[in-house]
Image: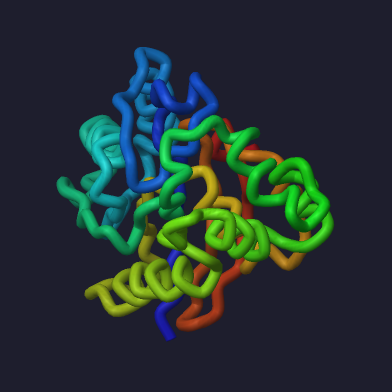
Length: 222
């Protein structure tokens, strides 16, 4: 089995991040601070050689990964592979809704007032299911729908022409990072705390086995 080192960076800050709005398949531009987040990530990873790079087809992820690769000084791949498999959770009718209000609407029928309350009592997967149920169109992804899609992204990485020990760059999203850490982190990390924009999370992919080796770093060697 090929072992791969996955370097996951959360995209730079966007205007929806400032406004505390759910931002799944919808998109808002990077702020000036968001562009600085991308530069910070690029500086942090400039000496890491990446054999491949992946991100979602949203502009916030694309702009972030372009800056990181542009700044890289380790003869890395020049272009990333964009795919909808790597998108953030789709929030359906709640796209663009205030995050606190959306999770309250999802949680209240079950006795919870916030995303943190739901996750603390159950899981991020349950939060996805609750949001899907609260969407009158039922288009928000539930946990099964979400992982059916994201698993295709993991398979895309696994089936790429890569070699044992290769480093892979993946620019990702806040809820997706939390979901990956919950699934593969062995309960070692606080998944009620969102990763910072431009922060680094590291996974080890050994065939079908994946483990989290670091979460929400702002320095490469923290």
